[in-house]
Amino acid sequence: MVCDYYIIKKQKLNVHELYKDHGIYWYDYGINWRAFAAFLCGFIPVLPGFAKSVTNSLNVGDAWKIYTFAWLFGFTIAVLVYYVICTYISPPTSAMVDVAVYPPQKGDVSPDGSGDEVIYKGEVRGDEKEVSPV
Image (tube, rainbow, N blue to C red; front, side, top):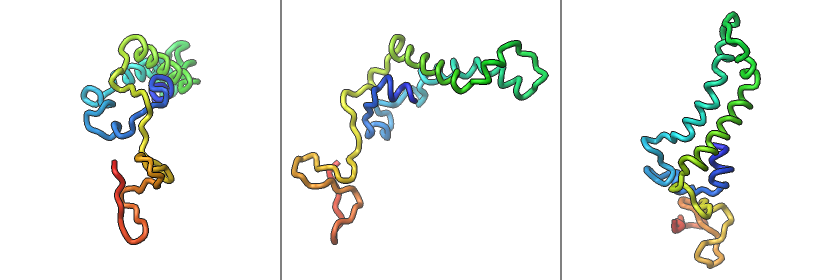
């Protein structure tokens, strides 16, 4: 998630698409195979060390040493693998947006340029309930 948001997508998301079924961030059967592959590459090398931590008498050679800094090793490998997959092997082109689209924040000015504050759905102002255009 860190690599995807900060490096691949450069902090540009369409927040409205995050909540749509089969939107631009939907993956085949709901599984991001790129992220799953990166996770496995970061997770599998530390398994021998994990097994040794559970059963100390288990002989795994020097593989247990990686487990002593597993989070750093796993994170670094997963970020590198995800970056390589998304940059050189299979870029997620449909999920890339040119401009970040975020929901309006309290105090934002209306998009029609009238200078009015955005009124949120369900927000009560005075005696009436008003709904902002979406």
